[in-house]
Image (cartoon, rainbow over all chains, first blue to last red; front, side):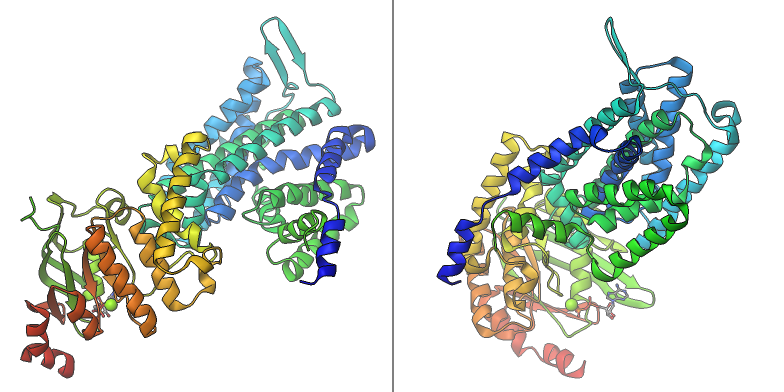
Length: 328
Length: 256
Ligand SMILES: Nc1ncnc2c1ncn2[C@@H]1O[C@H](COP(=O)(O)OP(=O)(O)O)[C@@H](O)[C@H]1O
Ligand SMILES: [Mg+2]
């Protein structure tokens, strides 16, 4: 550390606050900056960010690999869709019910599954998605089987005499953005709490955590349920945005997409998941315009990731963040 | 009350397949005592620890801690509710986390009244954590780890990791600590330090100890009583000096 270094450090301004402000403005102004298609892509990214946030708590912080996220996403989508179609309930009721039902389903599934060893646990969670799809296909009186639910009403809010329907893409974007921001805040609070530290302890060394009094099994079950709640709420957004839900909502492709967001963005980091959602979902959605190139671009992205960014993009983001903060 | 042993283990047995790792072993540790557990490799010492602390379920036998029957309790419950802490033969620390975080984690479950309360990030939660941090720093100073307290535990030497493991166990104000070969593979300077810390915890904090140790000098200098295991069975029990002189003990170590 020479004098020149120090001087340079002082001269360099902290650009983090301005950049954060710009990002917030861009997020808020996005529908007016980009095309409708960009807004649509961002909405899809925000929808998938929810289950990814939940999965990050499980994979990134607690160290449990799960492929069940699409199952809880599907449960949430059907719950919200059915409520909206049959009872016309307001969106916040549907979203809450979707989250709670997904969480409630995670309890009986988690209890036996979490007794298994890591590899068996992964297989078991894969089974949940397949079973979910089978139920959606065959419980025809409720789910209408392969036809699925259609004409799900656009989300509406009712507060006393006031009522408001989220009809356009732009207004849906703001709703998804608000929910995404809340979910991000919720994850941040969980991770910052002493429970978050215990989760990390479980990830780092389960037996050691156990020997220090941490009830590891109960934490794992609780985090499994919390992650399902996130997925369920995401599913409710999905149902209301697409206005159709079919058994294909329960698909492995969704589970792997959510996993790629977490691992590619940076497991165990919040910014990584936000960035990963934009990159892996927003980008592939945007690339739909060129279907031939889409899968190739996606595949290349994954290869780059595996070879150059083994810990996802989060370390790069962090370094960039420190750099503009004026640190060396 | 003082007459009652802090830990009383009766007739513990544990088999792995055909191997009778521990065979009908009884042992007690008095309040405020430092007891030693020795025996050749493979004689069942670690297995005995595992069965006493809930890591393994014994095939038979009972464990009583401070007058309470804790047989069948899980490892985490014995630590949390029983305040009986243990170390592992193969040193383990949270390698990716710094020294201070290692100790804070060790104290958390003893400071927060329930699992749900650990999700709080309010003022009360912050106050509890800062209390833990203060305690952690005191112990870090005592263990001589002050200069490395912000380094990832995995970057430190084996001896330093043993000290972290030891300091972590002191976070929850334990009643008794079971140490599995605390001196193995560390240099004499750190051995001194570990002995000092054990004696400090024993004298000033009133912690009882059961220590598995191969270093016979250490055993004779800190233990008040020694139990010898051989092939899963209790061979003898007595004062350190008598044990060293005992023919059967010599035979067990030499004969293997
Ligand atoms: N998890 C296990 N599975 C099978 N056998 C084991 C296991 N743990 C210990 N053993 C066996 O039990 C016996 C006692 O081992 P251990 O308790 O580690 O002895 P010590 O700690 O005295 O060296 C050994 O024969 C060992 O091979
Ligand atoms: Mg051993």
